[in-house]
Image (tube, rainbow over all chains, first blue to last red; front, side):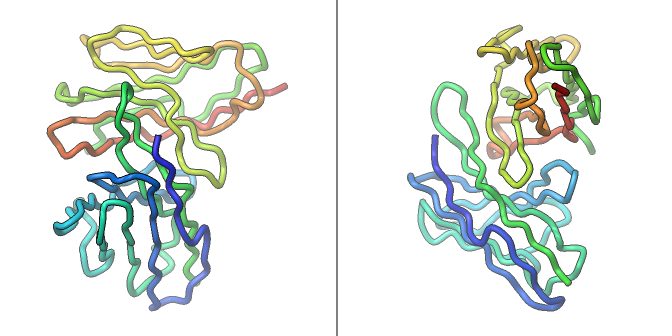
Length: 115
Length: 113
């Protein structure tokens, strides 16, 4: 399965600032997914990022707040813009694997605290 | 709309016991049902998965049972160990929807020694 490196692993940010999270995959993948996981909660899909096209956002998430870049088949970034304490959460990237189980691999996540 | 409902929210089992977590789904277009295990500070890791043409799949101590007519599937952990203590998520994927996963709410499993 793919190996994902996600940076930073955690950060504490001031209200009103922005944070860019990086996701690097060790193999080429078509789709990359960005999730948010609030403490003790399940995972909520923010958007799907295909290389060479605009990201597709889920209901409740907008590009101005969560701009995504996907410059090539192994890399993506998610920016959390104009942060507020409500954005405090764990952000995870994920890729779809190939093989018998069609497994999805997740990064270890970015734990964001907004103060 | 919550498309995958998971229960229980938390589960405490004695070492050596059987842990059972259940999920129910609504969308009959789902074609892939994985279970993920998540330890604190880590991303979810694929544990085991099943497709709807199979009623059961076993990998070591972990078994998925799938009931297509009832639209339910469950995870059984046999001989549960303290190291199994984690949060477990069921999920479902509808292949035509761009390969996105829809997750259940999660079950926090504690296995007491």
